[in-house]
Length: 467
Image (tube, rainbow, N blue to C red; front, side, top):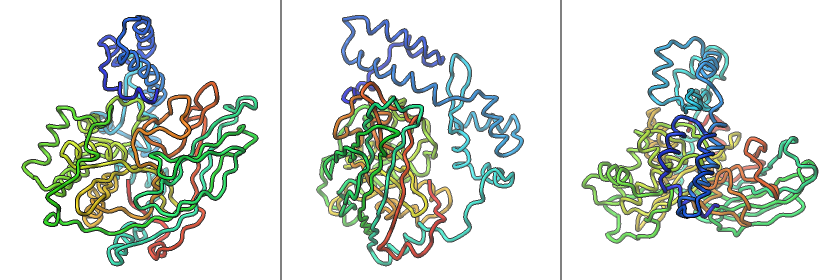
């Protein structure tokens, strides 16, 4: 089913759209089953409907709260919320919702999203004592950027461990499970990758430069441990590309569509033309796209990517998206503008703060592949950190574990079932012979065991300020 993801660009029949819009997902399922019983149904539409069944089963799980429940949770966090304030949050799209059988329901992470993106609400939670006060110390990213500019290059050596645990109630009476965990992809800024240990009885590594690199482990949950230790180096080089030094000839690789999400729709082409205007220099065109995304696309946690038929148009029309959505939009708009662009993702690996993160690369001759982190850049812009905002166009900090160089890329070995996230991989996947282990029935823990090799680490152990 992985190879059928392109069919998400196939339009849904009107009756299914009506049922989905009203939140009657049971009716969606019945309509799909009825249509798929037709032997004359076009094959592309059949595959699209089969994917829609997976989407329709997942979406309601991500919106568990009624309006009353959501508002009560917010008031528990920050204190009284007026009707006008609640309506403003709702109408401005700062809390994600859907209809389920005609009743408003709100996303499971709406509260943490507000605490991350609304400083005023977070301050009220701090005052109420329901949220810790932010660090007042020096900022690690700013200090690291300063040192990287001074030295021109910083190298970090990481020793990390990743472990997946299957919940006891999902351990199927001694039946074996296959687990895929991300590993560093040895390319670009990643060097000297070594897999140091694997605790499971059977382990299989994908090639060192595979588009989404993993280690696949097999064993019995409850009996076997699914853990891997590895080391790698990150080499960050500071670049100051100049528009007047850009080559007249530019390559054409990585400039095409990749359905369903990297799609050159009429709207995205019109948006690109509006952003770029009369500019012809590819470096300045890419900078204009970066400026637009960091200043106009609001950071927001997202539901599972598999539930979104077209991520890039969602972001461009709705004006919001998380790090991966913003990176994918940057890649798509760059490609429409004729600028090679590609994906990079994995983990943000600041000492004491490991988390999932996505960003992008774009190619400008004679400089080669440059980095772009719209999420970190947007955070810097909103906080008035102009130097940091400029840095993340063309450069990247060394606190990264890049595992994925390709978007929408299969694993080795290939899973039997469609992954929870078929586009990206930071938390891994797991499956039994008879089905997938759902995300809420497993957990992944990434640990930094040791970091060495850069003076930047001496500056500040924490205090990061990012999206």
